[in-house]
Image (cartoon, rainbow, N blue to C red; front, side, top):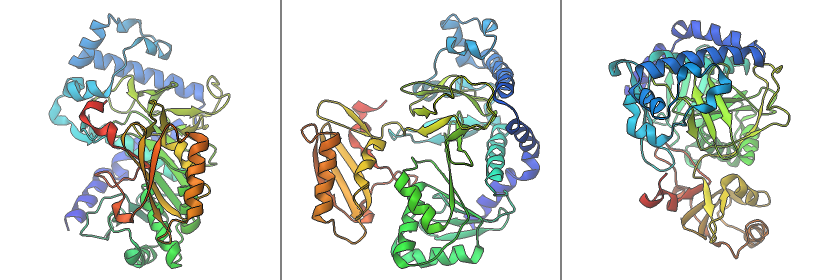
Length: 440
């Protein structure tokens, strides 16, 4: 009953009636050209900048110490003059960043990859803008918010419930804590009873359910799939789309609400959510400026994730606002292993080991110190063939070099996989990075 009341209330507080004006505004932004949208975003940026300087103790002090005359910031071409804001600053001075009384704000938080909590704040306007942005995108993918049935596999339910139907939002919530073969028929029955138009979830949770459905020979059809919060690995995408008979659309965003990228309808890349943020794509990070939260402004906020731009897209101003300009999201911060010589290997660089390893259901790299890694394998049939073991070692030698890393392959059960406190799966768990001496 508690989950039912909570999720019903969340829906009513974000209902179409409350977000209607923002949906109309964002729909109009979708029709703009890139140059028109840039001009609009520039004006909103300048408004937020002046508000931050005049109302936020943190930004007033930061810009004065940096000897910034904000009256000389005339447009987006001047944005690089402003200092970069880091997560450490948010942790230390978060409440000083706000531009309105604290009682008007709602606290949100993220644990981050280091396990240390980061508090952020939002007002109702920013919550409604965030919701309207998702509604506008999903509408273009063929899903109608509040009208079509949605299945949600995102860890909302605890271990005491497998499913929950919330009629107010037309949402079937599914637990991400019961994903094992013996409960799969219950998941499938719940899905078939409600016939959802779309399903949303963490890629790892959807993949786990897809594997179990396939192994049991069951049949599920859900036309649309929305994923977020984790890297969308290609082998996961193929399995999810095949088993659910679905078309998958990925989404990249942050709890801090400073960037939002959507996979394009033609699946050729990602486009920036119109009017959501100003993004500066660098070789080692992304600098983001939120345009939706003026009460807790994050201006030139550094994000560790790196975006790979599509060719010939950097300078063109004649593109449509939603033309995909991002080829790929390169990965979340700290998802890497390090060799004996300190060389870092990202999680995306490790996915090659699954290419010729059909017996592996899950692979997870666990690192405690430089150059030493446990590679934990969960297999489909309960046995890891010698030929697959040998092929993995060959590929590791070809790419990383076994002289730079000592690797131990372990066959484990699905229950032994490591997930975050929010139920997310990572290809890499860097225990070394989680120690107090290695936090960033």
